Length: 223
Ligand code: DC
Image (cartoon, rainbow, N blue to C red):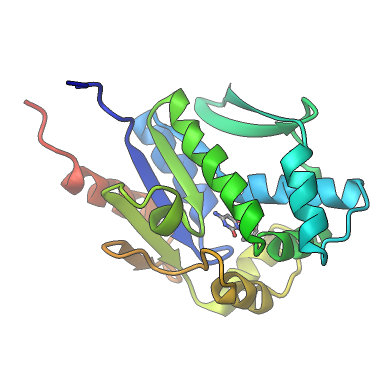
């Protein structure tokens, strides 16, 4: 009998600028878990398509690039936070993937089923590094549906728009949310059993404290 325990995966899904990244990092740090930003993985493919001048409106061409690109996963530690990075040709495009142009391209390529299959396989393999806090749009519904730790963050559109603007990024979040939730393949939705939080009026300290308290309730008692 295989008694080896699977690593724990805490799935944090939600709309754009709902505080997923900030709070997932705070939770990962507090628990000593590894942080995985799945949006960064989709963004890396969106950026790579733009670099390689692959037509982002052509699902076949994007799927072909996704089949062939040379990637690797790396677990890095910075400021007491361990994170998994997806590298392409040995490079992690940390800054390049955060532009409005890459955001727009990414929500298009993220709708392609073959891309989502590739991402799911790659994201599931991240548990080779240990216990995870994984943020995205379909982690609780599609990537790790078996996890008991599912959360969904949201905030009012005006609040999310001003959060992004404060980061210097001006984009149409309503259009992106609509594309993310209306695509046929693994759309953004609340996973069955997920705990939902609207944090419009909450600070990240309050949101992460709520998440940690809910996670604690779900953890089996230490014997
Ligand atoms: O979280 P983010 O803004 O970095 O995500 C970038 C895009 O990738 C966004 O349009 C939604 C998409 N995405 C997705 O479809 N599934 C995920 N698990 C993560 C991101």
